[in-house]
Every structure is written in structure tokens, then in C-alpha cells.
Amino acid sequence: MVFEDGVIHTGYILDNHENSSYLIVQLYLNYEMNMKSILVDTSVIIAVIVNEKSKSKLIRLTAGKDLVAPASLHWEIGNAFTAMFKRGKMDLPLAEKALEYYSMIPLRLVDANLRRSLAISYEHHIYAYDAYFLECARQYNLPLLTLDDSMRGIAEKLKIKVVEI
Image (cartoon, rainbow, N blue to C red):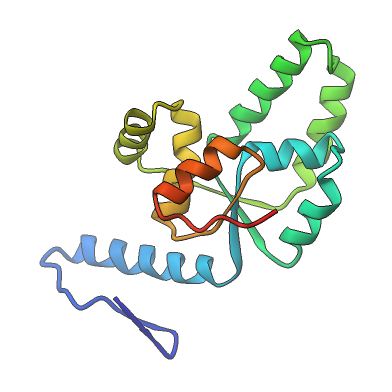
């Protein structure tokens, strides 16, 4: 695939017109997304909405960027809050306030390839939820921003660009 003057040249022809249209749209979206996008994981979003000490640095790193995450992010946020409930770190009114802040973050939610996500999960002995982030970063060729050292290490093994914090 070659990008010339904003035009995508794939170098191969598909017989099925429907598949050709889908491929062109996917390639265009990937090209548009890569120009100024960054894939953020749950740890980054939680750090920002619950005001952790890394918040200001994360905001600086993401300023002017389109934030991308797998569609599973919503459920991971809910799961993180329930874990905080169990540890006594958050109550329901605080979680509801944090959800208000979460809803203000402009995010583009994308699909992760389930088959490849499961392969990452299997190969690296991680939960599928973590693999979705890694697969999206790989699938859309986006740099990954995470506070999770384990995720960062696996991303580097997978040759995914990781944003330095």
C-alpha cells in the first residue's frame, strides 16, 4: 500500500465490488485515523477522570490528538469502577460524577478483530479486554498510550509503537 498525495494505492484488485468498496473505506479510515490519532487504554481514561497524579501529563500527551479506543472501553470503565467499589475507593455518587467526566472525553470507539484479539490473549496470557486494545493499535496502526507496564511490554513485543510517558 502506498500513500501518494493523500490517495491510497493498494496494489491489488478485488473481484467483488462490495468487498472493494469496504476495503477502500477501511483503508481511507485507517489513513485518516493515523494522521493525528492515538489509542488510549482504560488506565489512561481512569487516571484522567478520577484525577490521578498523571492526569496533567496525560492531557498534555493527548492534546490535539483524536483519541481512539476499542468499543469495549465502556464496559472496562464500568468494571474498573466496580473494582474500586469493592476496595472502598469509590462510592456510587462519585462513580456517577466520574461518568459525567468520562462522557465529556471525545473518543472514537472502533471494533477490534476478535479472532486476532483472542490470538494475542492466548499467546501472551492476558485477558481479552487487554488484547482488544493491543489489536486495535495494531489493526489501525496507532501508537498506544497506557499506564500499564505489562501492556506496554506486550505492545513492544508486538512491534506496536508505545507513547512514552
